Image (cartoon, rainbow, N blue to C red; front, side, top):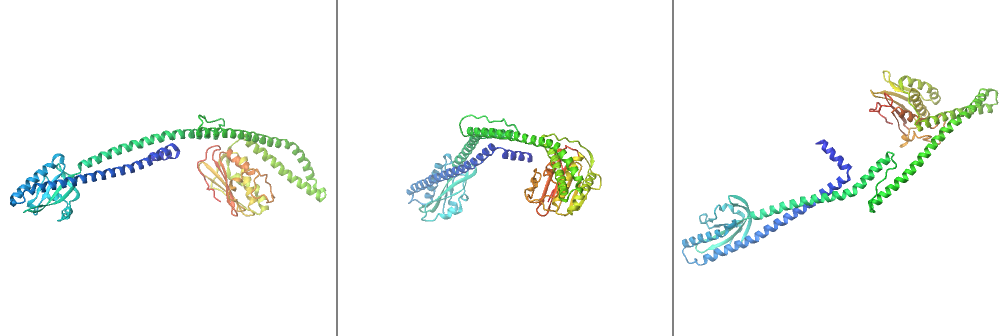
Amino acid sequence: MLHAGRTASSRWRGSLQTRVVVSTLVVSSVVVALFASLLLDSVGRGLVEAKTRVSLGEARAGLAFVETSLDAAQDEPADVQEFRLQDVFQRLASRGSPGNAYLVLLVGPSQRNAFASPGLATTDVPPDLAARLVPGSASAYAFADVPVDGRRDRGLVVGSLLTVPSLGEYRLYHLFPLTSERETQALVRRTATLAGLLLVGLLALITGLVARQVVTPVRMAARTAERLATGLLDERLHVQGEDEIARLGSSFNSMAEALQRQIRQLEDLSRVQRRFVADVSHELRTPLTTVRMAADVLFDGRRDYPHSAARAAELLQAELDRFENLLVDLLEISRHDAGAADLDPSPAELGTLLRRTLAAAQPLATRRGSSLELVLPSGAVVASIEPLRIERVVRNLVVNAIEHGEGRPVVVELSETESAVSVCVRDHGVGLAPGQAELVFNRFWRGDPSRARTTGGTGLGLAIAREDVRLHGGWLQAAGAPGRGSVFRMLLPRHAGHPLTETPLVLHS
């Protein structure tokens, strides 16, 4: 049952045609049910009103027949009149016998003066109807259950007052079964139900056909768009006709062609850009080596120079270091862009790697006034990684935390599960504004362009770090809040390239 419910829910969410057909089916069912109810109510009231008019006419005719038959017996003795009344009653009852048209009950001043059709008793008359028959009143009627062929069915009871000379007042009741009307109403109900079901089914079929004509081209467009999204840029819609759907298909194809041209231009531009960066980086290494050699000679002899020349030699050495680091980073990022970065994993103990990295960063932390704290599990944490790449990632994260930590402590925490390891680097400095958690991994992005840079930084460190982590099949994420610091989490599988299934540490600012 649960599986069927999920399947129906998925079909409802994923199919426009299903929603249109089901909605039309529900709405048409409600409308048809409403009209059928109104029709049955109207037919039922009409049948009852017609039966009431006919029954009142029959009752008046029966009363007139009895009164006419008794007019000639006004001067006869009471016993003769009673005998004649019984005879008239029998004839009146026989008139209603064919087809069970009606039953007759004649009640005199006392119960012993009652005459009734077979199977009829005085208790079959509603008490409120008997109370409404008073001298001077017209005929009255009420609905009640009446006996019909040994069973009881709904009927109409019409009562009239009859005055018999020498015998007093009698109450004459005609009981008309509504069996025929109920059968007619049931037939109308069955017919209306069958017609309604056929109408709803026909509407659902028509709606399905119409929706299919509209939805099929849309579905084809969606599938073509999905194939375009996967990189199949030559996919196009097959256009037929000149209607709105055909114009939509033509517009879609024109859009796809424009996107294909733009994407190819961007791909060509990207290839040219990557090739340019790689070529420039390689070509600059030779003159940089020459300049480096000359700068080293100047730097080594700076003590023999005037103060201004010595300072210039120191600045030249520092900027050459930054320039050389930038070339190294450009070459590395160009290898990632070209897909030429190779992974050479081997088992490594991450605790040792983190201690070595933090020891190398300690002089920078001392100069910036930050303390470095390392939180490790009780045992050794071994993972299959390329140590040089992961050490570079950790170094970039720690240096970044020191530079932006504003002299506050930097905490590095290592955690593990059976299938993954995690390294979190947290600082308590300027933090990250909303929306900057992903921007920090963009190339050459800076959170505050006006901030002077006093240590390292090529603008490519975090971008290369994320590519190195991805090469291992892991994640590198960031979080933070202004004034509360930031945290970077590196999540790696135990075995490089294996998919991650669990998270050792929760990432939060």
